[in-house]
Image (cartoon, rainbow, N blue to C red):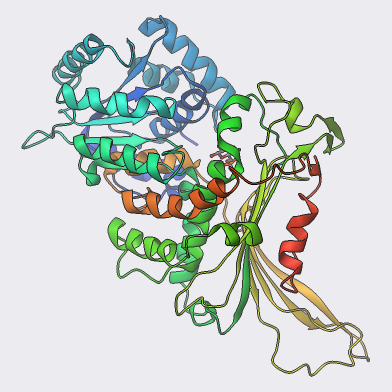
Length: 525
Ligand code: BG6
């Protein structure tokens, strides 16, 4: 594969990359964004090093960034352009999905400059504004700016306010778009999310705002929409007449790693249920949008969230189970319990596991439970959506050696990405023996291209002005309206008996009871 990036401009370069770059086939877009500057706040942080810079470098490598592209890395630490580039070079070596050719890496790093400043310091923003104007003149970036907030969430309002004060948010007539990408967590409950939306809304219009939920950028999650709406045979079955229930599992084998103090304030419900799991649920449950435009799609997702009744205290007590891992074994390694993790309170009541049963009160899903579970230090890393279909209306094969099980369609989000369908089949032979067999599609064997990382997809979309895979103001609030009463209901109840599951197991006993009470069980993953 030819990797060397050619220093060309305009159409010639675009034509060349279409002919020569097979990696482009893995990405859906033929368009290259307008010239612009990315202004990355929190550029020295972990997220930037692990995810943002490697994703940008991949976009650069595959010619998906414009030639007139620059990045201003904003941080408090005392780097120069040169020393910062060395740091980024190191992170790229460690975290890149595909290694970079030396020359391509040099071209990429040359486009990064470091801007030192405290987020609260007026002068830092005034200097930033001047620097950006200078870049437009020198590098032809034409006034387009993508602000990216990868800082701690407490700094979001401050930075947004400063961007407003300096007028950096103003779109210039006849050229010069301004957009802002905001990382998670977007608030820690409904009130704080509303406040943050208000602060952002004072400065930016909603169409300029891109709230990240990286699950939406995952290839398998995007494929969910293609699977449902690009095929004719599934949609007629996708409702209460044929579906018994839906299970969504996000299992992680890792613990809280170095993020103990963040996680103590967060817990599994805020960390992954309010966002990633509820997003998966909306994509499974939504009505087909009229078009694939960002607002048409997000309108449908918001309808699903609004059709989930806000949990009362009694609902939360009955339909939500929380857990915290104790010491145990994961992948043949002995691991410590949550309360022994660094920066974690030894009597912490933070949940590292949650299982919940939701209902969606609309015509399509009335009476079909959606079971969600997420946890750390479970036996393996696996995210999966299972659509469990109803049993046959009449059991014809009662005398068979084994009765067929109801059909399951399982969508494996990660790892081992793919989709499988389970159905009953007669075992060859003279008798009537029935077994459940599997029809399995895996990305790995069906396609020879690598999937892009979610951040590559999302960054490129934001640069192109496509907000479909970002959460809208009302959507983020509707999700908090479901998650907040749950976490609030735990504030003044009796403390749970934590830890209540050993690391390396599938969560507390009560998570089994939650689903068994309905005569069902969790799918073995
Ligand atoms: C993040 C959470 O949003 O998602 C982490 O903060 C979690 O706690 C991570 O580990 C999981 O992401 P992925 O892409 O590895 O499934």
